[in-house]
Image 1 (cartoon, one colour):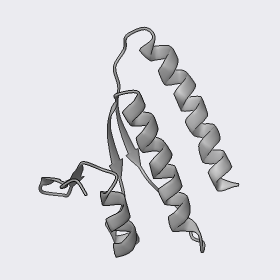
Image 2: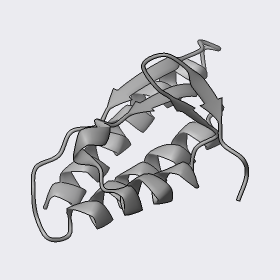
Image 3: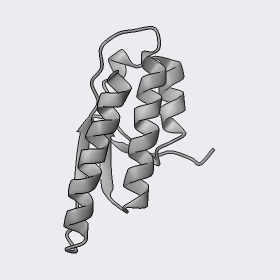
Image 4: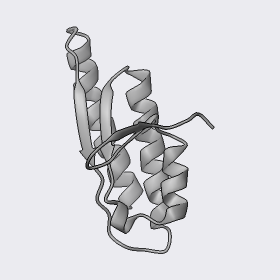
Length: 99
């Protein structure tokens, strides 16, 4: 159910942004990712991140995806790093080498 809600939200966002981009407007976005708990939560986070990354890339948007690293396992951090070009921390921005 959570994934379906996220997909509906993404669809609505897609519609709004497609309307605006047809008018040659440009977007920069900031997404602070929040989640509850559950056995499959990391899979859901990765699915959401994958769909968001694909949408952002296809539409040539500039986006920041923000995760609270105190809540993200080392394994999930590593998987997320394979999908993003930069890692921004409190005091620096690091380019992530392509895998």
